[in-house]
Length: 345
Image (cartoon, rainbow, N blue to C red; front, top):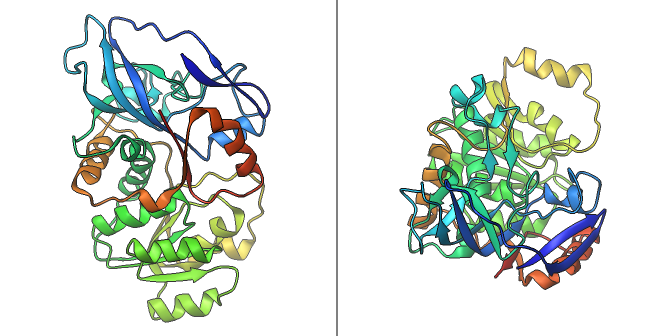
């Protein structure tokens, strides 16, 4: 089968590799769409791959073409997405429903071969059926949608609250839509790119702030009547916005960190003191799983895609053939990509 294989830092080759062989409890999926995640970028362009050669791809959808003898609830022809985490299911964290905290896990698309290939295999328990009306490209967005939903659930998101979201990349724009579905009263989003802010307005944001050009403090004061935001979600993973969240949160506010930082930053005493003086609830979120595995995040996300409440078309920069994977990373490195790159098979 054809696959995009990483052999070394920034060395992707398109070649034929062996098709996966399934175990009795697994299914084989013909990949129809597979996304490039932000977490894949340091694996390809940097040194974050666990080994070489490797095949990434953990945001994907496809059609079931083969099932193992023990598989009961998945059938050939099913349209599916896949929860890529493979936890041990036996440690204290797994038995508590905190599968993302498992220390003995594997992961499709990083620790084992993933869906930048024509076929991929997965355990039956990881399979999530998609509504018939959901396209394969839409279905490949289910994994990032579940990341958002997990963060909102972990922070105990409250309806009828004022909400701030920093970063209008894929996760930020999905957070905007999920927060709206979950009853946000008013949503203000922050980014440095006017085009991304324009998309946010089209997807339902009430207010936008360009953190490069706007007077942030004055805008926040005006929007919140000087009270700050009740719910603040960080999705950019950059030092400026990681710290900004503490500043713009209101008294007794909740701050959720979904974005993963990749550079060192220093927090000043005054910034840290926001947590004390405003008595903030600050939480982090990791991946997207709950009990029963893979969790309500996955059933909710599939439902929201099926009802059309979550729209992904404006999040896509381009749809490519697998042969164009290397070219896509050249453009990513040169910062000529704004949005999701999606492989379509």
